[in-house]
Image (cartoon, rainbow, N blue to C red; front, side, top):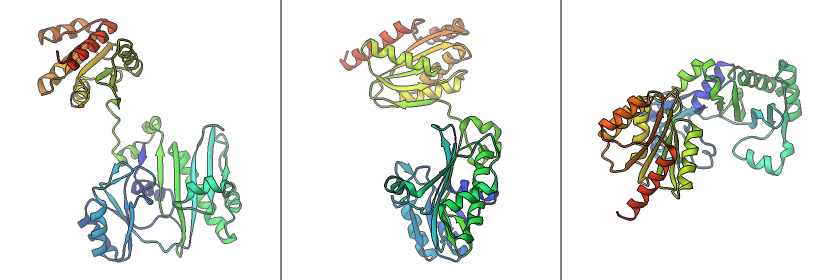
Length: 371
């Protein structure tokens, strides 16, 4: 789960890492009001979950509320690296003396966390990693042994910061690592960590938490208003939408479509235990996806009940204005009831996956031939 910058900063600050004063705006009018209340030059930062926003023009500055309105109005609704801007972080403009880079992530090759720091930070850090990799200091803490403050101070010394900054820098490194551990993070990053007249401050924040650990962090889920995706949906280049209950079954259905000469238009996994509502939503997705000419629904009921699937199919067809044809393979738990529901609705089905896939391809070919 990724967090917007303003959320990440809130979390970092709760763990003792200093941040700049800032407030979220959802409109140019709100941005103007915030800038007016703050009474100082502000940074106006697009809140998106992609990198490179600085170079893409997603961060701008304003010296007064009037400028803040113009800047905010120019940013809200724009797209940065494929993601639309809906919110802005209006933040006090920092008087930056020096920028640093600090990141903690998982080094999968070494099977342990890695702390990466540099005496240089900001938007050019990626270029620095390529041109002068020796300027990025790496340290691998042992995850089985407690990370201690003296280790973070030693990392600060290796960075080459002035002696008066070793302790404050070490403190930020230590707190970020403890936060990384506490929240089962994949990434906890500050770029740049800036030196100002007020000391070291996180001018930006990146925070990514492992999805499988979210049950241990209900406060984070609440903060991000996170909702697990009902389905996994991938668009492909073909014209036969493939839906299955489970990734393996969906992929097998796609293979069957390919085997009989067809081309999948989607991979859509509704997962185990899919409800009537999720079946309905899944069909609505593919029925409204323009390249699709035929839908192949491939369900082998285990936890997923065939009667729930049938009800979802019937409801989706009743509500949809689409003329897209649906070929259904339905068997497994409660299959007799599910098949009865389809029969009463006049919807044909197959028990064999191979027969259903072949039928879907033949039907698609007829549609393309204008038959």
